[in-house]
Image 1 (cartoon, rainbow, N blue to C red):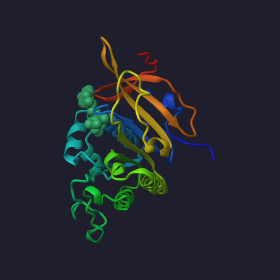
Image 2: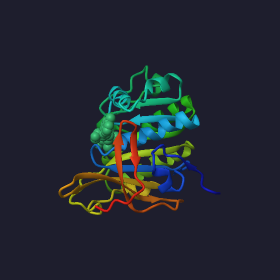
Image 3: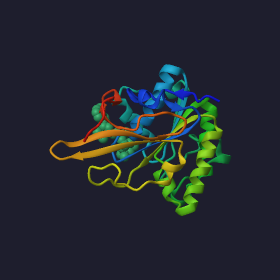
Image 4: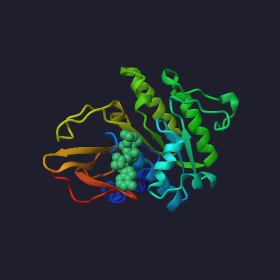
Length: 254
Ligand SMILES: Nc1ncnc2c1ncn2[C@@H]1O[C@H](COP(=O)(O)OP(=O)(O)OP(=O)(O)O)[C@@H](O)[C@H]1O
Ligand SMILES: [Mg+2]
């Protein structure tokens, strides 16, 4: 079957991807602190709502709902308005918090406590599935999956990730998950360790912070992989403005 592509909502990115993210797949956006991971993921959901009437579920594993809503106001996005219209659900699933009874749409019998080591992939998927049903979502974001993934090591980590990806795929939605890059040294983006998430997800986009002598930090984006797509493989500079992230077509030459 011919792959269908879903526009990313990011200026300049669809051209590099050959149309957008492959529909129904799980795409990883990985990058350093403040590189724009949350923003890029949210832009995908907002664009879906505004241009295609594709509803979305945003699962925040670290930032509170309150902070997220406030931050996104800086870009002119009124998340609560979309929530009121049932076009978007912002799910605060921070491991440090408990999903309260009134926020848990599955009711008290399924009320889950997401705390530290008890954070379970199964519980998370149950919550996501119910919000997808309620909003009739076509798009899901999980931001970030780092702490979830790091509770496991070795083979267990891969198995947990495969379980998560299988569950997301079974929902028939296009998913963006984000992860943190632990450290980047020097100017070469290749000097970093590759996480299992990068092997397991269908597509990977890396947001690099390049430290250039005399120029400071220049941000660039790389499509590391995108199964089923003939995509660009160069580094491209990007900028965060009051309208969100935009990618430039020119190559980043360092
Ligand atoms: N109005 C704005 N105009 C330009 N840049 C902005 C604006 N608001 C925020 N930013 C930039 O956006 C970045 C935050 O983006 P975002 O929260 O998506 O990053 P992140 O990769 O998710 O960060 P973290 O690792 O902390 O989760 C900040 O580093 C800031 O520089
Ligand atoms: Mg973030």
